[in-house]
Length: 339
Image (cartoon, rainbow, N blue to C red):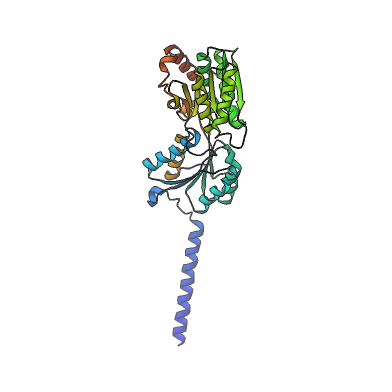
């Protein structure tokens, strides 16, 4: 019996020693970060769209298009939520984080506070914030040089104006939308220092999805002499384009290619390639190369730009198009300041 007890004691001691070594290895060896490609698991992406939702032919539609591209090319799965108001943003973002989505995207500068609050609570979840910046390490901030693209369309507006007056309709007055306005004004004045630039912002509960108010604002600017009206107002801009068509003047679209909404009326659109930024971020997450911090997209990398002028090329003419290309080159090379 004594021999058996001694043998059991030695066995218990051996097992304890082995267990101790195993726990020590776990504590000192960092776990390898596996990418979705290595695990074979489909990457899950959740996006909370900006107020106005899908169908704005602009900002939200562009972000959603980036997800569709990633689904087709990268095999991801995604879910989109269209909140009725900004008060729902935090709840929707939190639901995606709680469910363990690989990437959670907040669309628009109005979502910054809600996204940062959730991102702090879920430091192991990756987030992307469009149109605002965050210093949190798990948040990738996707921002654009809207003033560069707006400078280009402002220059074109001044070239095409016969009245010496152009207009701008903004959504909510904010630092971001003022970047569109300032770039547009400076571009117009670069071509014609004496040009008049009328500006109206959209008031109300939903400044980015109010086509009726957008139309009213555009008609007001047109009555003041504006014969080219640029909008940075999401779905509200649909009304701006309708007003321009009725008044037989030019409109300029924004974010997505809106030239086809009123062929010949929409002079061009200032492209803000949110789809490209969303797609690239998803690709980085899938490859395991996601990084927090600011990621800026401008003229130099086609993050912003203008359309190919499919319906207005002849009306604009080769000389003005060449001038526009010259201005673009000057901005990219740093010879022309858009500020």
